Each structure stands twice: as C-alpha cells, then as structure tokens.
Image 1 (cartoon, rainbow over the protein chains, first blue to last red):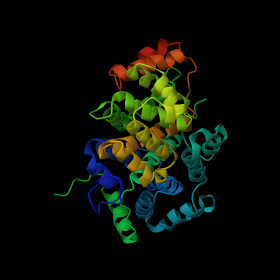
Image 2: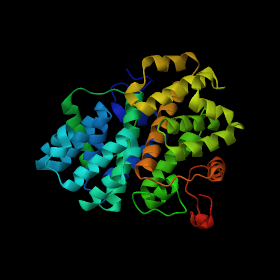
Image 3: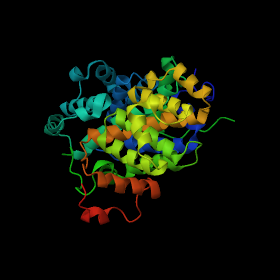
Length: 182
Length: 190
C-alpha cells in the first residue's frame, strides 16, 4: 500500500508523476535527456546502468522496468542484461562498460568512494569525459528515482509480462509524461 | 581534483551544471519548484530537509550551501546545526521533526521508510503532499550529493564562499543566471 493517496493500480514512478505533474515534468525530461538523447553511450548501455544501480538499491520496480527496456534495446543480445545484473565483472560486455559500471556502483554506495584510479582505468579502457560524466549522473539520478519510488511505497507489479510491455514502451516511445485517466 | 576538467571558478555543483546544460535544465527546474514553489512547508523548512540529507551523505559542499540558505531564511544558525546533529532536541515543530526523520530514512534507502515513520508525521499534522514533497526533496538531494562527490567536484573551504552562495539561492533561486557565470571568474574566494 502506498504511503500517500495515489491512483490505484498505476505502478511505480507513473503513479507519482500523476500525483504531482508539475514536478513529474522535469523528472521525465531528465530521464529522456539522460537515457535517450545525445550521449557517447548507447541507449541500451544507459538503460543497463539504470537497471544496475536500481538493482543495487533493491528497487524492484525500477530494476525490472529498466532491465526490460535494456533487454528490448539489446535485441538479440538481451541476455547481456541478466549477465550484468548477476555478475557484471564476468559479463560479456566491453572492458570500458565494466569500468563504468564499477564507477556507477561506487556512486550508488557512497559517491565519495569514486577514486582517481577508477576513473583512470575507465579512460584506459576508452572512456571519455562525457562517458564518465553521464555514467555518474545517470547513477545519481537513479538513486533519486529509486528513493522516490520506494520511499512512498508505490505499487510494484509482480507480473513479469507487465515489465516486458513497459520495457518495449520505454524502448520505442521513450519517457513521455503519463496523464491521469479520467 | 575533479574527475573531468571543470572551470576553476565554478566549484561544487555549478561547474557540473554548466558542463552539461541540457541535463542541468530539468534538475534546476525541479529544484526551483520543490524548494521555492508553492508549498505549505516554508522555504526555510525545505532547506532544512536539503541540509539534513546532504549532511547524512557527508557531502560537504551541499551541506554547507544549504545550511547557509536555511540560516538566512530562518534567521538563525542554531536550528540547522541542531537538526543536523541532534534532531530530537532541535527547535522545530513535532511535524517538522517527523518529516526530517523521514528524510533521513530516505537518505539511507527508499526501503528504509516505514509505515510507523509515516504515521508519526500524519499524527503530527503532516499532509500527504508534505510527506510527498519531503521524500522527493530528500531523493533529489541524494542525486545532487552523489553527482557532486562522484565527480570529485571542488569544495571551497572559505566560509565566505557559502555565505555568497546562500545569498544567491535565497534571492535568485535555482534557475540558471541569465548572464551566465563568467562574472565569477574574478572571484577569489575558494
């Protein structure tokens, strides 16, 4: 049961942005800009960072929905997402992405623990300033979304099919502010 | 040392927001609405939430900046110090105490918030909207704190820097300055 009076059966972040659309608008704009617009990281990689951080924050709704979006965007290599969520260090991904996920993990746990050596390693593996910046900001942003969604105990669907549909919507339409059903 | 090259005259969050202006826009908009827009919580009370979360995340830059803003808005410096270090005995209303406790739980994890902590706020007169805004402000400051510290952004040590910044965010607010930030290049307070 959500801690505040939210529209019934509307899950996670969607119920919150319908509750307060004026703050919902910049929240959805931020997700769209960070996960869909210009970045040296692919959309699939960015969704993977979002799912990875959400999983470390134990936020079921955000983990399942962003993992579904990442699977949709990884297409034939959708299994990559599950490898990464289980054991990213041994997952079939580039060394660059591994070193960026390591940084994202530190941001999630305690951002002060990101060291110059971690950043140096990412650069050695081909990461640019923008890769590093976008990774840190996506990780920080999902620490916000995860706390917002769980801090108010929003409705979390348990049916995996529901997330598959969400992932497809996120992969095709992106982040469009939902409207209150009338 | 910041992990990417950032301008020397823009320590803390400002250099990051100027580094990528497109993502900065919704972050600034959200902050302006939450901390300065219409609310039954005063601007000072909302800055207390920002301060207590930044303090919990040990983000020195954000804690000092929002403490400066809270002090200006509340007209004293004792309240914010007490809220950060000894919330139970801080000179704030029972409702504010309950909301600040929720904020400190959100800082740890969204899952750490309990029905009991919510009931405590409701019993002391908090509305759904106040609880919602408290959780979202606390979550937003986790974003800021992690962005600033995760990028290794510079943290000025001169208290005067934060007085000036506190003035700016209590008078101008959180929108990007129309004239940009080039005029701060001559600023020697770091």
